[in-house]
Length: 281
Image 1: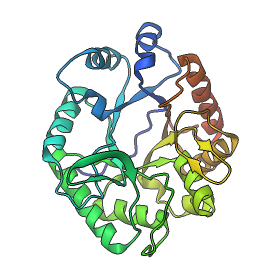
Image 2 (image 1 turned 45 degrees about the horizontal axis):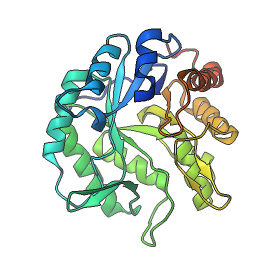
Image 3 (image 1 turned 180 degrees about the vertical axis):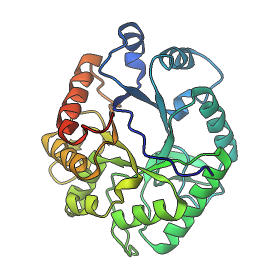
Image 4 (image 1 turned 30 degrees about the horizontal axis):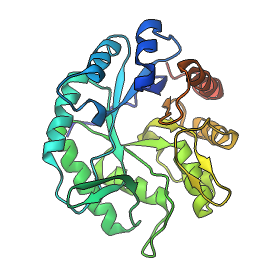
């Protein structure tokens, strides 16, 4: 594993989506500082995604974000997957890579969902060991992301923020703090999202996600297919006040609008953070 580094600040970025490939390549929008790619979309031998990735990365810094590492599983780590991931890292040269604090299936069968874990010391030890092994294999530290969740476990022994912080400390990794996920989980499980922020070690927070969701009145689902709502923007302002300059990006995975609409949200994030990020770049 590599030595800890000073927290970088990339500015304000977007999740790179196929719907925007051509527009980004032609326009080279200056209000986008960097892009995040979904790692699994590019763990392939060739084709259109890699063509656009190689072209766009000539103009923008990149980070990589995965959804299939299944860090919380009791299955053995998938080293075929990790070898492909490492090869993509060597190709893309991202500033960092990340995945979720979750499990995604059983017996290496991917359920294509991000499933929550019990918040216990046993789970802390299990996850920290697996993250450490991944970092040793890849040769660099990673970021882990907090989930949005819809259930809790009877065995929970600590709040989510304590669980997340304990893993980051024990594994010596960094955090991708998803502000929308904190809001979603706080609504679903009836906790104060500011308490969550108060329990997070700010020096380990290297990235933020911002996104929209679907609210049916009784439950919020993290769908990434709607505009960001005002309470999430307000929570983001609180994270900016507490943690200072942290690389921030907008996720949009469904009902994807024209690039201009996503850029407007990105500019809104930049304006909210500006009073707290003056020393960032």
